[in-house]
Length: 221
Ligand SMILES: C[S@@+](CC[C@H](N)C(=O)[O-])C[C@H]1O[C@@H](n2cnc3c(N)ncnc32)[C@H](O)[C@@H]1O
Image (cartoon, rainbow, N blue to C red; front, side):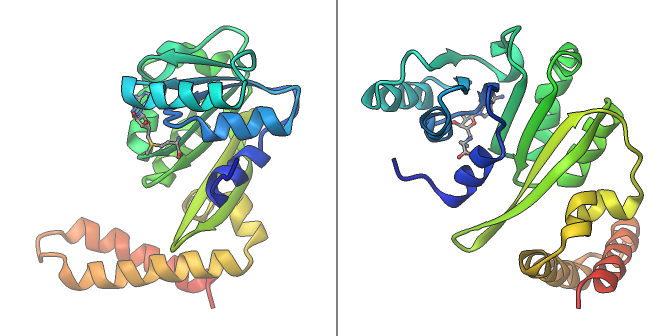
């Protein structure tokens, strides 16, 4: 099965023997990739909407993986099952992800791994999970088409991070590399444009944006 680079990267970060809940599975390409790649991975492919879940069911049937991937219709963590140890959510906004966790805070005590690829508000997501006893074990950037995506791997445990570490990601800040440069050069450009178009009364937003510009300039050549 052909899978895009973003989903492949997420799949490659899942540990052997994991029991995953993929929230917002859509077509279930990630779930199919996971169980085909590793015999010892099981997944629940879940989605809030019937259309995508039916699409997932068709794909799973096509690959004869019904015994490895269970499909569940439901909102966020409503589809959680007790022996799941890894939650995966990708291709959604960061604030939706936080909302999903807030609806079922008890699940954060039960799982040990959370893999997220939020489309936006990544810093909010990092701060939220780190306030609730997770730390960032790994972070990756992946380019898929013209977009660069962040993938965040949280593990159970407590670590303290500085504002700068939250902003760039503590692991990415250590690793850096070419994609990091490209990603933050784009972030710099969008903030420089934002500063120019922000109305005068958006003083606080301007203040924060200028601080972020300064931080990016310090880290990116
Ligand atoms: C853009 S697709 C992402 C699909 C896949 N995860 C990926 O990364 O390519 C978002 C999917 O999330 C589902 N979704 C949105 N909110 C959800 C929620 N609260 N609970 C479960 N699924 C949700 C949508 O129905 C849709 O199928």
